[in-house]
Length: 337
Image (cartoon, rainbow, N blue to C red; front, side, top):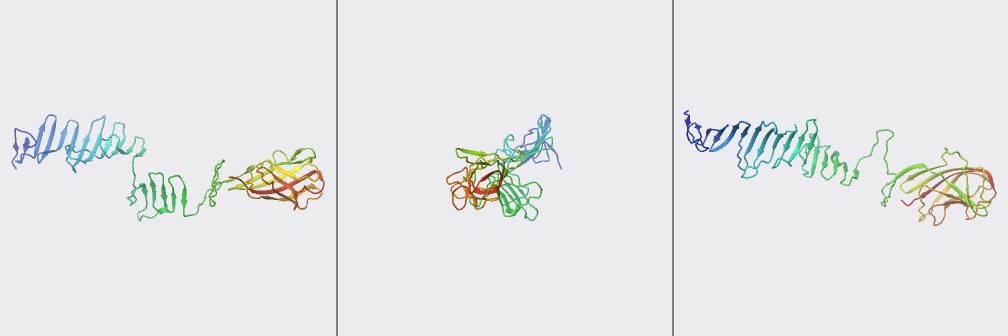
């Protein structure tokens, strides 16, 4: 094979060829180009080795740059006749390995690995190709079952759609909710606004409260002092949805309420919904000469009081009240929220 040396040394007539004027080696100042078909395909200079530095639409580029301030390895495709690069791999001056897609490079970083090993994603991540183009991250086994999908709008789907998290955070599942760790449960907020849907459990709460027993002394309404110690749970409550159950224990050593009058119970932990009637049950009543046929129900049109009186009439409790006695009772009612 003959080697031809040309004085022109252009891409159409390279300086060193095998007889084909537009293909060969084109020496230059601080660089050497390998030319085929009149186009420089590889350029080696004092800082870079560039493959297909000048791109036409659809051609590819590979560049190695050893510039210490901005080291990079770039593999790019041309998306226009001017050879605009649209993708590649870059090792930048901050010590980060960056995969980019778009031009310019800045602002189009899609995947970055930092020096401390952290991985940062910008855009869609697909662990396995999925037909759902709205998916941001898809993880599944080789058969496509038990697929987990995370969407860019905050939604997620697990177990092939058996359980899903909606864009607003709601949880939807076709399976049981199983709590495997003892001491855990479903926690509701301390303050709840309620939900009007009949099939929605929107609240659960349990705690203590301090009941107040009140009645007419003959000249004014007075409170009865509960003689149970301060550390004793005089009242407990359980709230499920809008239904409240109260547990009351009241002891007294002095009864200021005049004989034959009804008693009133105040200071409930939640207001009474007086749209519907509510009632209670007395388990034990001492200190009253006639404790039979005594009932508890809500005061009409009141959101704050239940009263204890003779049943079936609405009069007071029959018989005398002793200075020593006790009341143990439960009350169930609906509250407003």
